[in-house]
Image 1 (cartoon, rainbow, N blue to C red):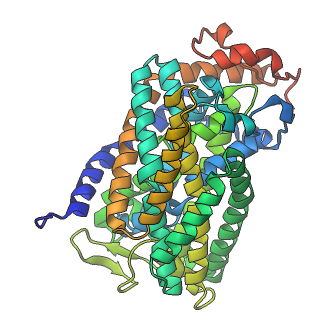
Image 2 (cartoon, rainbow, N blue to C red):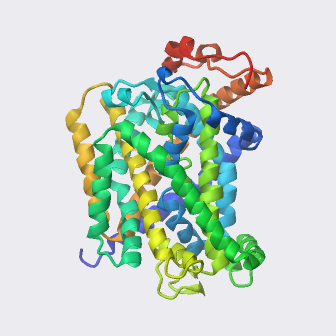
Image 3 (spheres, one colour):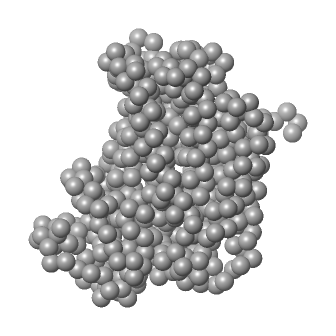
Length: 498
């Protein structure tokens, strides 16, 4: 390569893309929060109500709970473990505060994404998705039918197929391989074979199998991981007040050692919250569109709740666990350390392994390696689902067997090779791809702001009347929402809100 540090070059490009974009997500989240009068706080009871709501299987579509779990599969990946460690390393413990703030405020971006995905979804033409009884929609669909920009929708879909099918799985598997090496001293090709075989078994079984596997695994994984993180925190309960003071002092720049990197705390907290939650990246929009509900605003609330689960529960538990146990380092940005508690331990999931070792010595590495494997596995399934959804948009009802086969083969290839190539290279390439898609999506979300607000106001109006909201795009003057015109008479309407 003539002495060129390719991974370093990609990292510089990645930083240039993400540094301003994370603040755009936060700014857009604030705008949507003001416009919806804090819908993410006011409508928490509605979020829980939607998750309890059942539907007749003959109606088609996933239930709100199934769509939530499918979205969580992409959100609760290694970014919620390794990504949090990266934030603490670069921005200090104060980055956790800005992660939480971004989750609370920025989740309205997720609300907007899901609402638009529902509004402009379509009845699925693909045979596999029909067997899974799903609707289809997502980012390219609301760009095409909401903004009337089909070419931009096609560009996003192409980026989605390439990114989620052939690039992004690499950094998930890279983290899985690193954790397995530390825990079990396994060469990277061993987890590469295991994960590739696991993914093949599921994706070759079609969308129905993907939904069933994620629905079974994700809740169990999330609850188990939270339970263990809380156990570590309670074991170090006496250190919690000191840790909380440290976190807040670091966040606002008044800590004697970490005060100088308050700017980094903000930058990395916002950036990793966006990355971990996929907020604004558009990847959860496809799961949101697959649900069958009576009003787009309902699924917007459900997807908002999924961000709470990821950022405010999983990510915060990960971060607090590392801080109270003292198992973290903080970089000075020049190759040295402001805090160096873990000599020679690379940043990432290994820090969580060290934290759990304080609970049961020698057990942390194995548990986290398995957790990362399973979290990464479900995330990889979600990635394939997103890539496949984008491909179906491009095929536009055509059969496309050859393209579908290429996508499956390419996904399995990157899952294998992602384990054995340079981890820094995979993360930098993944960050660039995600950043490019996110920039397009965020611009479109800003342009679609009036539409989201119109749908939100319609939902609020019906709730105030005591009704279970139903969506009539024609009455609202919304064009392109053909699904709702065709399905309106099939959606059951109750006279009163439950």
